[in-house]
Length: 581
Image 1 (cartoon, one colour):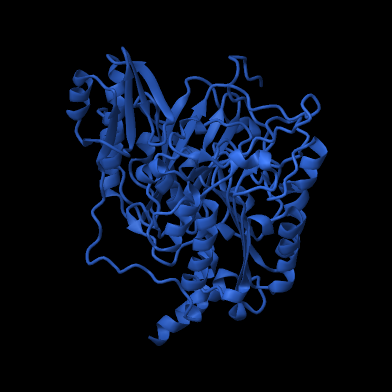
Image 2: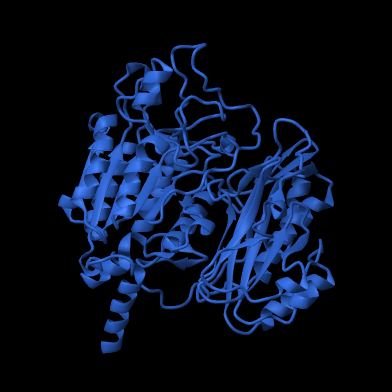
């Protein structure tokens, strides 16, 4: 027991060694919820989920996460004016001390620029929050009353950041620069407020385009110790569960109206979410929390990806791997959240692909049901198949298009079968290597449009050999990394590795065919024997010798193996123009 006590103290100190007075660290919070507006013309844009959002968040923080009641300030509707919100954010510097964790939570409407010429000067990802007293009479009044990220939040958050606080911003609102994915949001109101001012002909903010086009790259992340968890990427809207029909389709944890993202966050804080089939409990980091939130919303058919900033490439201090809201620090003072009861046996991993069918012919239904490792379901589902005449659409759980083809196309069944094969072939993995992987730019939600470019970023807490295996929309596999013998080298721990490479000329450019790819990132403590055979392997099927070599190699791999999956969605742009050099 003495050893365990020393280990707990060492873990707490290691969690934030840059902070003075770490043992006296507190949690301080500002909670803001705006569901109503002073302007009667905005009544149709009211949100019904924000009231329960803030009440439940306040209760959860004080009862389960070690926040003292006096350290939580809550602003609701009329209290949440532009001046009051910014004043309370500034006041957090006096309410907290170096070493504290400062939480800023916002529930309400978000907005963002729809093109580069917008007059609102809205930054990447953080967009703008809409306060109670928003004035949309003119562009100038709208500018003056929005809570704009670059203008209003960045300087205040920088003061807290540079003053030795760990700042956590959780925002359940929309930052839709160009709404790429959220056309599939079928049963929820949006938390995106289009900023159409009344001086028509004067406002320069254009409406969202009918089809997405390439977005400019986001500017550098301006903080070191500020964590942003947003409810949607810069290409999505967030959902408000606020009607009886919505509650029936997507029940919230307490049966009340909530933002879809906040409902997921509350479940996370309550110990209800899992990651890779394993309950998170009360001790997890921000990266794990974000992944669990993403998986939960995805499988409830919400077309929104929670985002975690800073991205791997912009997180030299690895704050994304810090304990969520200082949970490890809270453990020393007895304020840790209660972990769920440990299961008596390890949960059995479900490798079955659950397919939901919508208006599918009996013949096609029979063919899909005959596939090994596939189960037909009536709701939710890992894959969705819909049919219109002779055309069939295969989609992800949130409605993202994977492939559209003829019902007779064998590639449709091939893609579904490949998903089932991949689920069986890839091991569950462990957390022992500290593997984190994502696409960069990190605010895009793994969603890219024609002519945009991106890379994969991989970071490890222990040195490991890494493989990236791609399952494309046609059901074929490709080894993206290692692509050459020189890449069959151990990747050091600590620093993010860009794949294919950090040089812009090495970035992946989005071109046709568009759809959904599933990329599996594997980390190996010891180099597996099949690395040489599969290096740079291009497009092989699940019934090929290469696939057989991969399965046998994974089954015989020695040492720790870590796994993370990334679903990449690509969409066509407004035209079929050449992307350029």
